[in-house]
Image (tube, rainbow, N blue to C red; front, side, top):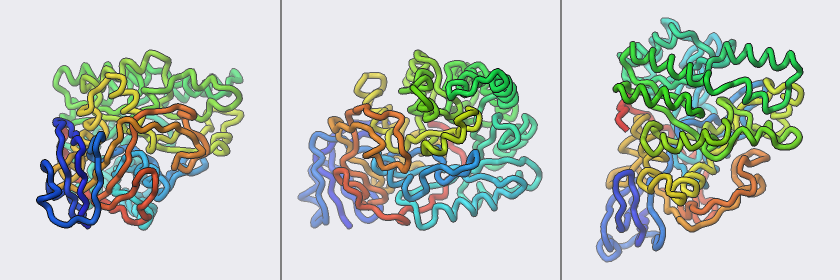
Length: 464
Protein backbone atom coordinates (compact mmCIF):
# COMPACT_ATOMS: atom_id res chain seq x y z
CA UNK A 1 0.00 0.00 0.00
CA UNK A 2 1.36 3.39 -1.03
CA UNK A 3 -0.26 6.53 0.37
CA UNK A 4 0.64 10.12 -0.45
CA UNK A 5 -0.24 12.89 2.01
CA UNK A 6 0.19 16.15 0.12
CA UNK A 7 0.03 19.89 0.80
CA UNK A 8 0.21 19.60 4.58
CA UNK A 9 2.42 21.37 7.10
CA UNK A 10 4.68 18.89 8.86
CA UNK A 11 5.22 19.46 12.56
CA UNK A 12 7.79 17.64 14.66
CA UNK A 13 9.21 18.51 18.07
CA UNK A 14 11.80 20.73 16.39
CA UNK A 15 10.58 21.66 12.90
CA UNK A 16 7.61 23.15 11.05
CA UNK A 17 7.58 23.10 7.25
CA UNK A 18 5.38 22.42 4.24
CA UNK A 19 6.01 19.05 2.61
CA UNK A 20 4.43 15.87 1.29
CA UNK A 21 4.76 12.45 2.92
CA UNK A 22 4.89 9.14 1.08
CA UNK A 23 3.97 6.06 3.10
CA UNK A 24 4.99 2.70 1.68
CA UNK A 25 3.89 -0.39 3.58
CA UNK A 26 4.42 0.19 7.30
CA UNK A 27 6.97 2.99 7.05
CA UNK A 28 7.45 6.56 5.92
CA UNK A 29 9.59 6.30 2.79
CA UNK A 30 9.94 9.87 1.46
CA UNK A 31 9.37 13.40 2.74
CA UNK A 32 9.71 16.19 0.20
CA UNK A 33 8.20 19.04 -1.78
CA UNK A 34 5.67 18.31 -4.54
CA UNK A 35 6.19 14.54 -4.50
CA UNK A 36 3.23 13.58 -6.70
CA UNK A 37 5.09 13.76 -10.06
CA UNK A 38 8.14 12.00 -8.61
CA UNK A 39 6.83 8.93 -6.79
CA UNK A 40 4.80 7.18 -9.46
CA UNK A 41 1.55 5.35 -8.85
CA UNK A 42 0.02 5.49 -5.38
CA UNK A 43 -3.03 3.74 -3.94
CA UNK A 44 -4.42 6.70 -2.02
CA UNK A 45 -3.90 10.46 -1.97
CA UNK A 46 -4.87 12.63 1.00
CA UNK A 47 -4.97 16.38 0.53
CA UNK A 48 -3.85 17.94 3.82
CA UNK A 49 -4.19 21.56 2.72
CA UNK A 50 -4.72 23.74 5.79
CA UNK A 51 -3.85 20.89 8.11
CA UNK A 52 -0.83 19.70 10.07
CA UNK A 53 0.86 16.34 9.63
CA UNK A 54 2.21 15.13 12.96
CA UNK A 55 3.59 11.92 14.48
CA UNK A 56 0.95 9.73 16.08
CA UNK A 57 0.39 10.37 19.75
CA UNK A 58 1.99 8.07 22.31
CA UNK A 59 0.21 7.64 25.64
CA UNK A 60 2.67 6.10 28.11
CA UNK A 61 0.17 5.67 30.95
CA UNK A 62 -3.00 3.59 30.49
CA UNK A 63 -4.81 0.87 32.41
CA UNK A 64 -6.82 -1.32 30.04
CA UNK A 65 -8.78 -4.28 31.43
CA UNK A 66 -7.32 -3.67 34.89
CA UNK A 67 -8.78 -5.19 38.07
CA UNK A 68 -9.18 -2.58 40.81
CA UNK A 69 -11.33 -2.24 43.93
CA UNK A 70 -13.56 -5.21 43.23
CA UNK A 71 -14.21 -4.38 39.58
CA UNK A 72 -12.33 -3.94 36.27
CA UNK A 73 -11.63 -0.88 34.14
CA UNK A 74 -14.27 -0.51 31.44
CA UNK A 75 -12.05 -0.40 28.35
CA UNK A 76 -10.23 -3.50 27.17
CA UNK A 77 -7.42 -3.41 24.62
CA UNK A 78 -9.84 -3.38 21.70
CA UNK A 79 -12.14 -0.58 22.80
CA UNK A 80 -9.34 1.38 24.46
CA UNK A 81 -6.97 1.40 21.49
CA UNK A 82 -9.81 2.18 19.10
CA UNK A 83 -10.79 5.19 21.21
CA UNK A 84 -7.13 6.21 21.38
CA UNK A 85 -6.90 6.14 17.59
CA UNK A 86 -9.99 8.32 17.18
CA UNK A 87 -8.19 10.82 19.41
CA UNK A 88 -4.94 10.71 17.43
CA UNK A 89 -2.97 8.33 19.66
CA UNK A 90 -1.36 5.41 17.83
CA UNK A 91 0.67 3.69 20.56
CA UNK A 92 0.05 2.96 24.25
CA UNK A 93 2.26 1.80 27.08
CA UNK A 94 -0.01 -0.02 29.51
CA UNK A 95 0.78 -1.37 32.98
CA UNK A 96 1.10 -5.10 33.51
CA UNK A 97 0.77 -6.09 37.17
CA UNK A 98 2.80 -8.60 39.15
CA UNK A 99 0.21 -10.78 40.92
CA UNK A 100 0.30 -10.82 44.72
CA UNK A 101 2.89 -13.43 45.65
CA UNK A 102 3.57 -14.20 41.99
CA UNK A 103 6.32 -13.41 39.52
CA UNK A 104 6.85 -10.59 37.06
CA UNK A 105 6.65 -13.17 34.28
CA UNK A 106 3.17 -14.23 35.38
CA UNK A 107 1.99 -10.62 35.25
CA UNK A 108 3.56 -10.02 31.86
CA UNK A 109 2.05 -13.19 30.39
CA UNK A 110 -1.40 -12.21 31.68
CA UNK A 111 -1.21 -8.79 30.01
CA UNK A 112 0.02 -10.27 26.75
CA UNK A 113 -3.10 -12.47 26.80
CA UNK A 114 -5.33 -9.45 27.47
CA UNK A 115 -3.94 -7.56 24.47
CA UNK A 116 -3.33 -10.37 21.98
CA UNK A 117 -5.82 -10.30 19.11
CA UNK A 118 -7.57 -7.23 20.48
CA UNK A 119 -5.31 -4.18 20.18
CA UNK A 120 -6.04 -1.96 17.18
CA UNK A 121 -2.86 0.12 17.64
CA UNK A 122 0.64 -0.80 18.74
CA UNK A 123 1.29 -1.15 22.45
CA UNK A 124 3.93 -1.97 25.02
CA UNK A 125 4.03 -2.65 28.76
CA UNK A 126 5.49 -1.27 31.94
CA UNK A 127 5.62 -3.70 34.87
CA UNK A 128 4.05 -2.89 38.24
CA UNK A 129 6.12 -4.51 40.98
CA UNK A 130 4.40 -5.53 44.20
CA UNK A 131 7.23 -7.61 45.68
CA UNK A 132 10.85 -6.56 45.51
CA UNK A 133 12.99 -9.59 46.40
CA UNK A 134 15.92 -11.50 44.95
CA UNK A 135 13.75 -13.33 42.46
CA UNK A 136 11.91 -10.25 41.17
CA UNK A 137 15.13 -8.22 40.99
CA UNK A 138 16.62 -10.94 38.79
CA UNK A 139 13.48 -10.94 36.66
CA UNK A 140 13.93 -7.22 36.06
CA UNK A 141 17.15 -8.04 34.18
CA UNK A 142 15.34 -10.60 32.04
CA UNK A 143 12.48 -8.26 31.17
CA UNK A 144 14.84 -5.44 30.14
CA UNK A 145 17.25 -7.61 28.14
CA UNK A 146 14.89 -10.08 26.50
CA UNK A 147 11.26 -8.94 26.71
CA UNK A 148 11.48 -5.26 25.76
CA UNK A 149 9.86 -4.24 29.05
CA UNK A 150 12.24 -1.61 30.33
CA UNK A 151 10.26 0.34 32.94
CA UNK A 152 8.94 -0.65 36.34
CA UNK A 153 6.32 1.09 38.45
CA UNK A 154 6.41 1.17 42.23
CA UNK A 155 4.07 2.83 44.72
CA UNK A 156 4.44 4.82 47.91
CA UNK A 157 0.61 4.63 48.04
CA UNK A 158 -2.07 1.96 48.60
CA UNK A 159 -0.72 0.03 51.63
CA UNK A 160 -1.70 -3.64 51.46
CA UNK A 161 -2.25 -3.46 47.70
CA UNK A 162 0.70 -1.87 45.87
CA UNK A 163 2.74 -0.08 48.55
CA UNK A 164 6.45 -0.91 48.82
CA UNK A 165 8.83 0.47 51.41
CA UNK A 166 11.73 2.82 50.79
CA UNK A 167 14.36 0.09 51.03
CA UNK A 168 12.59 -1.93 48.34
CA UNK A 169 12.29 1.11 46.10
CA UNK A 170 15.99 1.79 46.57
CA UNK A 171 16.95 -1.80 45.68
CA UNK A 172 14.85 -1.65 42.52
CA UNK A 173 16.42 1.67 41.59
CA UNK A 174 19.90 0.25 42.05
CA UNK A 175 18.96 -2.65 39.78
CA UNK A 176 17.98 -0.22 36.99
CA UNK A 177 21.44 1.31 37.38
CA UNK A 178 22.79 -2.07 36.25
CA UNK A 179 20.31 -3.03 33.53
CA UNK A 180 19.28 0.30 32.00
CA UNK A 181 15.67 0.16 33.13
CA UNK A 182 13.68 3.09 34.50
CA UNK A 183 11.70 3.30 37.73
CA UNK A 184 8.30 5.00 37.52
CA UNK A 185 6.88 6.17 40.84
CA UNK A 186 3.37 6.80 42.11
CA UNK A 187 4.37 9.35 44.72
CA UNK A 188 1.84 9.94 47.49
CA UNK A 189 2.32 9.16 51.20
CA UNK A 190 -0.06 6.21 51.37
CA UNK A 191 0.23 5.31 55.08
CA UNK A 192 -0.58 8.87 56.18
CA UNK A 193 -3.41 9.12 53.64
CA UNK A 194 -4.90 5.95 55.18
CA UNK A 195 -4.92 7.65 58.58
CA UNK A 196 -6.70 10.69 57.14
CA UNK A 197 -9.25 8.46 55.38
CA UNK A 198 -9.92 6.51 58.57
CA UNK A 199 -10.44 9.73 60.53
CA UNK A 200 -12.76 11.24 57.90
CA UNK A 201 -14.95 8.13 57.80
CA UNK A 202 -15.11 8.05 61.59
CA UNK A 203 -16.65 11.54 61.43
CA UNK A 204 -19.24 10.39 58.89
CA UNK A 205 -17.59 12.25 56.01
CA UNK A 206 -18.36 9.88 53.13
CA UNK A 207 -18.98 12.09 50.05
CA UNK A 208 -16.67 11.94 46.98
CA UNK A 209 -15.05 15.30 47.77
CA UNK A 210 -13.37 13.74 50.81
CA UNK A 211 -11.31 11.60 48.48
CA UNK A 212 -9.51 14.79 47.49
CA UNK A 213 -9.45 16.29 50.97
CA UNK A 214 -7.77 13.21 52.49
CA UNK A 215 -5.01 13.25 49.88
CA UNK A 216 -3.51 16.72 50.45
CA UNK A 217 -0.98 18.06 47.93
CA UNK A 218 1.72 18.31 50.58
CA UNK A 219 1.76 14.50 50.84
CA UNK A 220 2.37 14.28 47.09
CA UNK A 221 5.19 16.79 47.47
CA UNK A 222 6.69 14.87 50.40
CA UNK A 223 6.63 11.54 48.58
CA UNK A 224 8.07 13.10 45.42
CA UNK A 225 10.93 14.59 47.44
CA UNK A 226 11.59 11.20 49.02
CA UNK A 227 11.69 9.13 45.84
CA UNK A 228 13.87 11.74 44.13
CA UNK A 229 16.27 11.53 47.08
CA UNK A 230 16.41 7.74 46.76
CA UNK A 231 17.13 8.01 43.02
CA UNK A 232 19.78 10.64 43.67
CA UNK A 233 21.60 8.34 46.11
CA UNK A 234 21.21 5.39 43.74
CA UNK A 235 22.52 7.66 40.95
CA UNK A 236 19.74 6.69 38.53
CA UNK A 237 16.90 8.57 36.80
CA UNK A 238 13.39 8.49 38.24
CA UNK A 239 10.09 9.17 36.50
CA UNK A 240 7.10 10.38 38.53
CA UNK A 241 3.74 9.44 37.05
CA UNK A 242 0.56 11.59 37.03
CA UNK A 243 2.02 14.55 38.90
CA UNK A 244 -0.90 16.73 39.99
CA UNK A 245 0.27 19.26 42.58
CA UNK A 246 2.50 22.31 42.41
CA UNK A 247 4.11 21.09 45.64
CA UNK A 248 5.33 17.98 43.82
CA UNK A 249 6.37 19.97 40.76
CA UNK A 250 8.52 22.19 42.97
CA UNK A 251 10.44 19.13 44.17
CA UNK A 252 11.03 18.00 40.57
CA UNK A 253 12.11 21.48 39.51
CA UNK A 254 14.58 21.88 42.37
CA UNK A 255 16.05 18.43 41.69
CA UNK A 256 16.46 19.16 37.98
CA UNK A 257 18.06 22.52 38.78
CA UNK A 258 20.77 20.73 40.74
CA UNK A 259 21.35 18.21 37.97
CA UNK A 260 19.28 15.24 39.11
CA UNK A 261 17.69 13.15 36.34
CA UNK A 262 14.17 13.62 37.71
CA UNK A 263 11.34 13.43 35.18
CA UNK A 264 7.57 13.71 35.55
CA UNK A 265 4.38 13.55 33.56
CA UNK A 266 1.10 15.28 34.22
CA UNK A 267 -2.36 14.48 32.82
CA UNK A 268 -5.11 16.53 31.14
CA UNK A 269 -7.45 16.18 34.12
CA UNK A 270 -5.03 18.19 36.26
CA UNK A 271 -4.82 20.88 33.56
CA UNK A 272 -8.54 21.22 32.80
CA UNK A 273 -10.48 20.08 35.89
CA UNK A 274 -10.32 21.05 39.57
CA UNK A 275 -11.50 20.14 43.05
CA UNK A 276 -14.72 22.02 42.24
CA UNK A 277 -15.81 19.02 40.15
CA UNK A 278 -16.13 16.97 43.34
CA UNK A 279 -18.88 19.37 44.41
CA UNK A 280 -21.18 18.42 41.49
CA UNK A 281 -24.73 17.49 42.60
CA UNK A 282 -25.65 14.10 44.00
CA UNK A 283 -22.99 11.46 43.51
CA UNK A 284 -21.63 12.99 40.29
CA UNK A 285 -18.42 13.99 42.04
CA UNK A 286 -17.48 10.30 42.03
CA UNK A 287 -16.75 10.55 38.30
CA UNK A 288 -13.60 12.50 39.17
CA UNK A 289 -12.26 10.21 41.89
CA UNK A 290 -8.72 9.39 40.82
CA UNK A 291 -5.34 9.32 42.54
CA UNK A 292 -3.74 11.78 42.92
CA UNK A 293 -6.99 13.75 43.15
CA UNK A 294 -7.99 16.93 41.37
CA UNK A 295 -6.49 20.02 42.98
CA UNK A 296 -7.89 23.48 43.74
CA UNK A 297 -8.30 26.03 40.96
CA UNK A 298 -5.10 27.91 40.23
CA UNK A 299 -2.89 24.85 40.68
CA UNK A 300 -3.16 24.13 36.95
CA UNK A 301 -1.26 27.29 36.05
CA UNK A 302 1.82 25.90 37.80
CA UNK A 303 1.52 22.74 35.72
CA UNK A 304 1.22 24.70 32.46
CA UNK A 305 4.34 26.61 33.43
CA UNK A 306 6.07 23.31 34.16
CA UNK A 307 5.17 22.03 30.70
CA UNK A 308 6.37 25.19 29.02
CA UNK A 309 9.69 25.18 30.89
CA UNK A 310 10.25 21.41 30.55
CA UNK A 311 10.09 20.70 34.29
CA UNK A 312 7.24 18.41 33.22
CA UNK A 313 8.40 16.14 30.42
CA UNK A 314 5.10 15.10 28.84
CA UNK A 315 1.35 14.60 29.19
CA UNK A 316 -0.06 11.09 29.62
CA UNK A 317 -3.65 10.19 30.56
CA UNK A 318 -3.74 7.56 33.32
CA UNK A 319 -6.76 6.30 31.36
CA UNK A 320 -8.60 4.00 33.78
CA UNK A 321 -12.37 4.33 33.27
CA UNK A 322 -15.11 2.91 35.47
CA UNK A 323 -18.81 3.23 34.67
CA UNK A 324 -21.23 4.93 37.05
CA UNK A 325 -22.48 1.65 38.52
CA UNK A 326 -18.89 0.73 39.47
CA UNK A 327 -18.34 4.16 40.99
CA UNK A 328 -21.42 3.48 43.14
CA UNK A 329 -19.46 0.82 45.02
CA UNK A 330 -18.44 3.83 47.12
CA UNK A 331 -21.92 5.33 47.50
CA UNK A 332 -21.63 5.35 51.30
CA UNK A 333 -17.83 5.38 51.57
CA UNK A 334 -15.63 7.50 49.27
CA UNK A 335 -12.66 5.19 49.90
CA UNK A 336 -14.46 2.39 48.02
CA UNK A 337 -15.02 4.40 44.84
CA UNK A 338 -12.84 2.82 42.12
CA UNK A 339 -10.04 5.26 41.32
CA UNK A 340 -9.78 6.33 37.70
CA UNK A 341 -11.27 8.26 34.80
CA UNK A 342 -11.32 8.10 30.98
CA UNK A 343 -8.95 10.24 28.91
CA UNK A 344 -7.23 8.32 26.12
CA UNK A 345 -9.47 9.81 23.41
CA UNK A 346 -9.63 13.41 24.62
CA UNK A 347 -5.93 14.12 25.34
CA UNK A 348 -4.73 15.46 21.98
CA UNK A 349 -7.70 17.74 21.30
CA UNK A 350 -7.74 19.13 24.84
CA UNK A 351 -4.04 19.96 24.68
CA UNK A 352 -4.36 21.59 21.28
CA UNK A 353 -7.37 23.65 22.29
CA UNK A 354 -6.21 24.58 25.79
CA UNK A 355 -2.50 24.69 25.04
CA UNK A 356 -1.67 25.69 21.46
CA UNK A 357 -4.78 27.78 20.70
CA UNK A 358 -4.52 29.59 24.03
CA UNK A 359 -0.82 30.36 23.48
CA UNK A 360 0.43 28.35 26.47
CA UNK A 361 2.60 26.10 24.26
CA UNK A 362 3.57 26.14 20.60
CA UNK A 363 2.95 23.38 18.08
CA UNK A 364 6.46 21.93 18.41
CA UNK A 365 6.02 21.61 22.17
CA UNK A 366 2.62 20.02 21.55
CA UNK A 367 4.26 17.31 19.43
CA UNK A 368 7.01 16.94 22.02
CA UNK A 369 4.73 16.34 25.00
CA UNK A 370 2.25 14.09 23.17
CA UNK A 371 4.62 11.96 21.09
CA UNK A 372 8.36 12.63 20.93
CA UNK A 373 9.10 12.84 24.65
CA UNK A 374 7.16 9.64 25.45
CA UNK A 375 9.00 7.87 22.62
CA UNK A 376 12.39 8.99 23.87
CA UNK A 377 11.63 8.43 27.56
CA UNK A 378 10.42 4.90 27.06
CA UNK A 379 12.69 3.52 24.35
CA UNK A 380 10.45 3.83 21.28
CA UNK A 381 12.41 6.57 19.46
CA UNK A 382 13.16 6.93 16.55
CA UNK A 383 10.94 4.06 15.42
CA UNK A 384 8.08 6.13 16.77
CA UNK A 385 7.64 9.71 17.95
CA UNK A 386 8.76 11.62 14.87
CA UNK A 387 8.34 11.94 11.10
CA UNK A 388 11.33 10.77 9.06
CA UNK A 389 12.08 8.22 6.34
CA UNK A 390 12.37 4.76 7.90
CA UNK A 391 10.13 5.54 10.88
CA UNK A 392 6.94 3.62 11.50
CA UNK A 393 4.17 5.35 9.57
CA UNK A 394 2.27 6.37 12.70
CA UNK A 395 0.97 9.57 11.17
CA UNK A 396 -1.89 11.90 12.06
CA UNK A 397 -3.38 14.52 9.77
CA UNK A 398 -4.56 17.10 12.29
CA UNK A 399 -7.19 19.70 11.44
CA UNK A 400 -6.59 22.76 13.65
CA UNK A 401 -10.12 24.06 13.04
CA UNK A 402 -12.13 20.86 13.52
CA UNK A 403 -14.62 21.19 16.37
CA UNK A 404 -15.54 18.35 18.72
CA UNK A 405 -18.23 18.59 21.39
CA UNK A 406 -17.45 15.88 23.91
CA UNK A 407 -20.20 13.58 25.15
CA UNK A 408 -20.49 10.06 26.51
CA UNK A 409 -23.09 9.53 23.76
CA UNK A 410 -20.59 10.06 20.96
CA UNK A 411 -17.12 9.29 22.33
CA UNK A 412 -15.59 5.88 21.62
CA UNK A 413 -14.39 5.00 25.12
CA UNK A 414 -16.49 2.26 26.73
CA UNK A 415 -17.68 4.32 29.69
CA UNK A 416 -21.01 6.03 30.37
CA UNK A 417 -19.74 9.50 31.18
CA UNK A 418 -17.19 11.98 29.89
CA UNK A 419 -15.30 14.26 32.32
CA UNK A 420 -15.58 17.04 29.72
CA UNK A 421 -19.27 16.51 28.92
CA UNK A 422 -20.55 19.38 26.75
CA UNK A 423 -17.12 20.98 26.28
CA UNK A 424 -16.26 21.94 22.70
CA UNK A 425 -12.62 21.76 21.68
CA UNK A 426 -11.16 23.09 18.44
CA UNK A 427 -8.50 20.91 16.78
CA UNK A 428 -8.83 17.17 16.06
CA UNK A 429 -7.54 14.46 13.72
CA UNK A 430 -9.03 13.92 10.28
CA UNK A 431 -6.85 10.90 9.38
CA UNK A 432 -4.96 8.51 11.64
CA UNK A 433 -2.42 5.94 10.43
CA UNK A 434 -0.82 3.18 12.46
CA UNK A 435 2.18 1.61 10.70
CA UNK A 436 0.74 2.73 7.38
CA UNK A 437 -2.75 1.33 8.02
CA UNK A 438 -5.47 3.98 7.87
CA UNK A 439 -7.48 3.53 11.06
CA UNK A 440 -9.63 6.66 11.06
CA UNK A 441 -10.76 8.79 8.12
CA UNK A 442 -13.08 11.73 8.82
CA UNK A 443 -14.55 10.05 11.92
CA UNK A 444 -15.07 6.72 10.15
CA UNK A 445 -13.44 3.62 11.67
CA UNK A 446 -11.38 1.59 9.19
CA UNK A 447 -9.14 -0.31 11.60
CA UNK A 448 -9.51 -3.79 13.02
CA UNK A 449 -8.95 -5.57 16.29
CA UNK A 450 -5.69 -7.49 16.48
CA UNK A 451 -3.82 -5.34 13.96
CA UNK A 452 -1.78 -3.70 16.71
CA UNK A 453 1.57 -5.21 17.60
CA UNK A 454 3.49 -5.47 20.85
CA UNK A 455 6.56 -3.26 20.60
CA UNK A 456 9.72 -4.22 22.46
CA UNK A 457 11.32 -1.11 23.90
CA UNK A 458 14.98 -0.22 24.24
CA UNK A 459 16.79 0.30 27.53
CA UNK A 460 17.09 3.73 29.06
CA UNK A 461 17.80 6.89 27.09
CA UNK A 462 16.27 9.64 29.20
CA UNK A 463 17.40 12.78 27.41
CA UNK A 464 14.03 13.96 26.16
